[in-house]
Length: 312
Image (cartoon, rainbow, N blue to C red):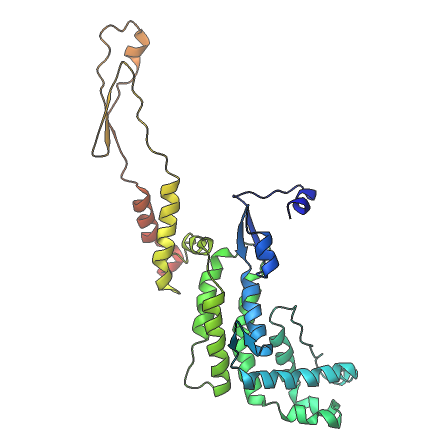
């Protein structure tokens, strides 16, 4: 890794942040000499992939049986139509699933839903059973559910603006989105339970996510994830205190300093034997009282600050 980076004039150090995917080789390559930030989109996309294609993950069965049957039937029909070049008769080009494309399952299912009523006219007789095995109502329900994930991936994929502050609230929004409600079908409930648990356990937040969210004036109150607020507050306070140098008091033969209760008092008595006229022209030293603007107070003032848009 060091040799490759050096060829581009780059080197690693403990002040460098590197964003990579979360495969074992990448984690090992950037384990030292830098701070590695796991790609949030990769975390999310892999869990979506597991929900549709994996029978087992981390020695645990993926209990999304009906959703995976739906996915397999759609994939077989799409593969057949594209291979036989019959999709020219459809109003929209079918999208074949690719595990290298973020949220690839959603794009395949959503396009299939858009042309569902026309698919039968371009299918060979041997593939009709796969089409009849697709429950259109369930397909529509799943696509509607996945739209939020697609929006999250697109928002976190911004290339010209920082997105670190968005990771924590978007992650929590997706967890809330996976909460089961009464109207959900049994198949969608399975999908929600799996994704919600995987997001909680695999997509782990790092200190930088908490700090960046806290420093955004519109996110600092953590209304989306109130249980994370104290963690962020303490991390920022810890960083501030670590950057405050210990106050030093300088003394010389002409003055003495006394520190009491956070107040530094300078003795303004001029040296008796001073022959330096300029010394007599200087302003007299005044008591220097330590400011009340402590790091903790600054944080509290920051939290109390109301952004203009918040008043509406």
